[in-house]
Length: 548
Image: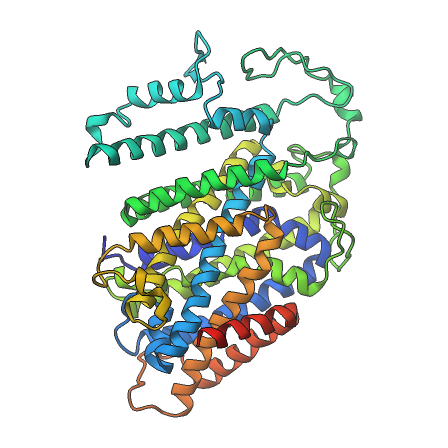
């Protein structure tokens, strides 16, 4: 395990990768339509304020001494005692683990909008599709596994001699690599065909990228395109069983990747983040060009209406039929700002946690908050209200030069964030088990703090898998929100107690700390819990008491 990461790779990039994820792409435009740009900005600033105040407390505790494995858990357990630290730490672990489920469900929802989902499911399990060489078609149809294997092996891929380790491990790694290649190819296949679906009244004759037995499509005329309105076609709804199957497959692939070693996650994080930033740039440029009437992307002129989403305008969700409120939208958005702990979760792998955690965390919060506000006002001031309500993938519809960039970026962002949370959560669970703070976790206790916690990894997989079974992203986010808010309240409370009591052992070098900021952070986090759902807050506190 790499234990010499700096501020950028160890804290800032993991935080940004967790923050700029599924909510930004799939839910922020919808929140903007319901709450208005003013209300959505209030939600963003309120959530950002709670995480900023918590980061100040975290920075003070981080600069007070050495932070060992466990990050926030280590801070609280060494400040308020192992019992309190263990209870809050386990709740934070559950929040991080369920956040993995949230990111996986987000990836599945994004795949729903990339074309023929049934065809894609067949591709993933190797039922057969065409793969393409550069510049043309492959001469004959091959199964997904054969095509992926030949292409990847030709490029020096997962040959048996290229993977170190015992034979059974090599076979596992080969299967995981094949699954990743096939899933990526299938997503690209669906996304490319999604751009060429027939309009109402058109008959499918052949897709642009046909599979076996598929026929050519006659593209619509300009007049037909002008007469087409998106409201004529209902958004395809994914079967719940297929959603669960896809989520289970993706969760298993992510867990296998993490179980091999966290260094693979670290190596891929920069690549994943680069793709995400390209996607954000694509839809940002696209929405500006759409507002200037330079290009419409996949939208129409009627989807452009200035200042149509400034003030709140709550109406039923077209998917669930429920009318949201300010507090429900707050619960929906809050998980998007919970990535601030991504760096501190891996404190044992940082070269200098006392320096890296404050700088990286605060920089990530500042950058992400500015990004959210810009997105809120761009879409709120340019796109028509009904479009933001009905089109959950409007960020891809306006993307320049093609929606494919954003569609791939959404899936990559979700997978990247889930890798980060799946890598951090087991480290936290292993630290709690190693301290013997909670007796029933002793079976997960690693031989030493430096041992990679493979048992904790698969325990995390089991919990995260169960959390994906509801199959709905909106059902998971409030649970994640409650766990994180209580953990943040615990960090602020511990820092407040040390500051107000003037503990002799509390001498933080972080110059921007004052106990009043920690008190304000604690009150704000508890208030948000009660505003979002006092019932969930009550049961979460009961869980804390039971663990204590």
